[in-house]
Structure formats: structure tokens, C-alpha cells
Length: 245
Image 1 (tube, rainbow, N blue to C red):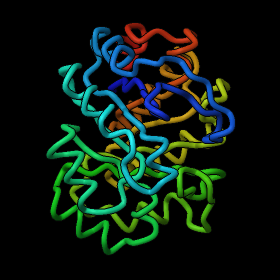
Image 2: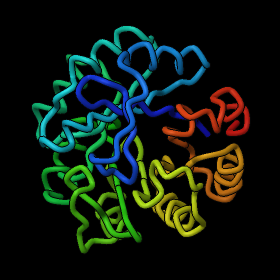
Image 3: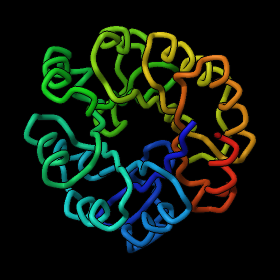
Image 4: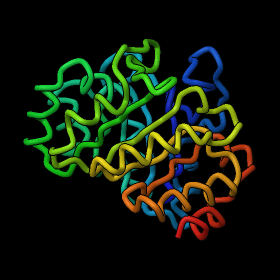
């Protein structure tokens, strides 16, 4: 399994939200490039970048910061938040320099468009499914739809996607661990043929061990995004990388 440290960007700063709530923000660094470099120096292979302003605005906002990160760190980066048209995808892949882009809201709202983009950018798109009680949340987590995560994913099981990121937003930023129901959802998604990356709630090394057990049963559940726990020191990057391997 791969460990992907999260760098969430808002107003050009590195922050974390609780349950995706823009009113519950903690600023961890005024220098996201320095923070990204710190995780890169710990030997990870991918960084998970989120443009929180972009997710809210529906278009890239912090792309200049993202470009500074991709230019500095020398490792692969993925980016989500506000990617809702072809121009934004091209901007990120061709100019900003990310390795793959994460699309959530627009995949739910316009399935045909998402399928077309997957054809134009094979192996470069990540389906981002953010859910509360297994139902898909959109618009920077501001709305919860009537579509289940499994139902949405099934539409896209035959596409050439890089991965699927599954986030239980009830857990995200809460430092309470990953619950079994969420792990069950992730395993169901992995069984559909996706390379699934777990996100939300990873708090201690025990969460990494539990996800590694799930990975042994469903090998395509093969990535773990860690955010607040790294910044608050309840989990160590090097230890989590070793446990994931």
C-alpha cells in the first residue's frame, strides 16, 4: 500500500478542515511548499493536494501554489478541488505538472462528460467519491446527494482510471479512526476493479494496520491518504510507510 500525505490549500496556506466544514479550519503552515517538501523528504511517492477554494468556487484557485509544489518536491502529486471542465484538467496535467487529477462533483453531475474525459486522459483521472453514510457528497462537501457511493462507482467500472479515492466525510479531520463500515465500502469498491485509496479518519498506526489487513483480502485497496494526524503528530510518516508495505 502507498501512503499519501495530504496538503490541503486554502488562501495559499496549508490547512485542515473538520468534516469538510469551511468554518472549522486549522492553519498548519503559511508555506505549503515547505510542508510538501517535508513529506517528500520522508520517502513517500505521492502527495495528495486539495484546492479547497477551488472545490468551493468550482474552478482552480490555488493552482499557482500547486505549481510551486510540483516544481519543488520532485515526486508525483495528485490534485483535487474544482476540476469540472476539460480546460481545468489540461491546466493541471500540462501546465501545473500534477500526475493525475481528482474529479468528484462533475462525475456525479455529468456522467457522460466524465466518461469522455476518461477517454481523452486515460490513466490520468481519479474518481473522487466523498460520502456521508455511504451517500455521495458534492460541491466541496456542501451538499449530500441521493446517490450511493457504490451506485456511482458502478457506472465507471470499465473506464481507464488511475484510482478511486473514497472519503467518509463524517470521519475526515475528526481524529477518531476509520470505522468498519467505511472499510467495508472500500473493499466493495475494490472488488469492482478500482484501485481504491482510503481517505478520512486515519489517526494512528492502528488504522494503517487495519487497512493493511483489508488490503490483504482485497489487494486493489492499495492507498491511504493521511492528513490531520500527520500535522498533529499522532502518526509518523516513516512508520506508516513501513506498516503499509
